[in-house]
Amino acid sequence: MSDKEAPIGVYDSGVGGLSVLRAIHSQLPYETTLYFGDQAKVPYGERSLEEVRQLAEGVTRMMMSQGAKLIVIACNTASAAALKHLRALYPDFPFVGMEPAVKPAAEQTLSGKVGVLATPSTFHGELYASVVERFAKDVQIYEATCPGLVKQIERGYLNTYLTRNILQQALQPMLAEGVDTLVMGCTHFPFVIPLIQQIAGDGVRVIDPAPAIARQTERVLIQRYLLRSSNDQPFHRYLTSGDPTRFSRLLEQLLGVRARPERWLWVGNSLRHG
Image 1 (tube, rainbow, N blue to C red):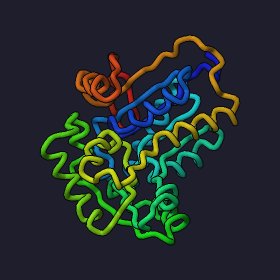
Image 2 (image 1 turned 90 degrees about the vertical axis):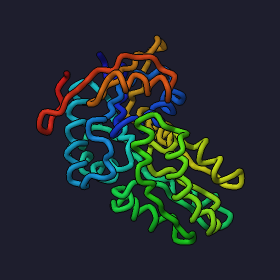
Image 3 (image 1 turned 120 degrees about the vertical axis):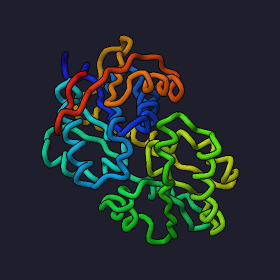
């Protein structure tokens, strides 16, 4: 397989990265993809940055062994913990990471008040602090970690009483302060945007970073001369460290895709096909 025909690797702690994969499929319909959801370790947001860094390193080695030509770290927590480290470790290999969409939010807000929904690890990372320092000096930022929301989405519970309650507790204090723009700082959260919009109302803009990540992926492929040259039907593989049957159901629910995911198991700091 030539480099151009090789797949784009997309990696998340679970199913959240499927929101980014969906955007990549839309932006780059002829590219093949390799998706890995680390469902045995989800949620990452409750783990230390060092542990997440080690997990990301193990996933990167596995994806490289499977021929990925580029890896999208479709996880805000893993990007915050490991993106800089991985680029230093593999300086010639292209990575695309997640960055909280604070810049477009700061540019688009009319009230000067922006809400960010993300995991604790993302908020504690240097990447988030840097983005806020560079782009949000003139706006007020309100933060919420939405405890339990990632687990709800991993179960496919996108519009249950508990999911709504978690979001209401996160959003109502922000809305009371006049927030008019919300940033999805976790790739799981775009799957509950319809529910967020119900709670927040039409006057609040919700920013999903996935389309911007897909465009950046395309730019990097062009720069590296790695765009797939074939117009043949692309092949998409789905991998999980969790239960393939449950992952299969979520693929159909979240992406409308019917597939048989492969299981990969953690053995120490490495992944092995199971």
